[in-house]
Figure 1 (cartoon, one colour):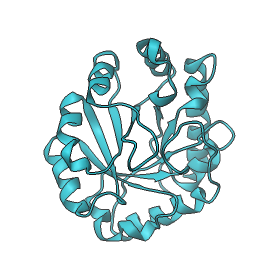
Figure 2 (figure 1 turned 120 degrees about the horizontal axis):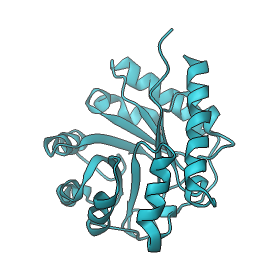
Figure 3 (figure 1 turned 135 degrees about the vertical axis):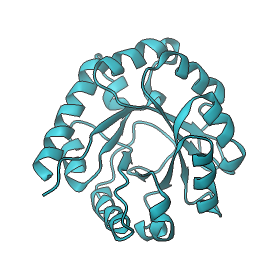
Figure 4 (figure 1 turned 180 degrees about the vertical axis):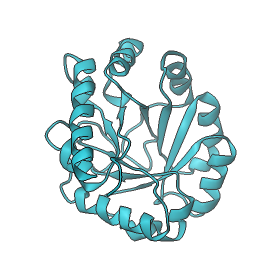
Length: 229
């Protein structure tokens, strides 16, 4: 038996009120948010355009939690340094966009940030096999990336287990982050499958009380992780 995984809740500001971003972030942090998740989209790799380094810089000024920056963009190597300088503590890139993933992960770390790889729903866990030992964390997409508020893909639970098997075979205990459709109805099953970082957007900022919603998600995930340990 091992101890329960360290649960981290990462509210996604993609679903926050950008006219009151500082207020929404503060509410989520009062509710126990561990990270602030920033979804960067370029309109090429995914069919949407969101935010760039200026937003990250502004969020960094008001957030008291580390910034988890998810680059859903083509040619991420060109922009990683700017996002780290803007305040990113964690940077994740999609395996589907990076031809030299080991080099990119090494580059992220050289800038002082944690380095993660992201898998789209149709990308198999085995895509991580050759670089599993080089990962600080893995992001499993449980929706097709590009928009907030989508429905969780149920097969993602098995994907989490397969990713954990790949990491374990490489001797890695890197945490698995789940991104897409996470809410109170499924977070316990996701935690039981082995994820420990939970990105939630609408489930937090789409409610009338982001503080209470964050607290409730944390409680459910923690309970499931403790039961699994």
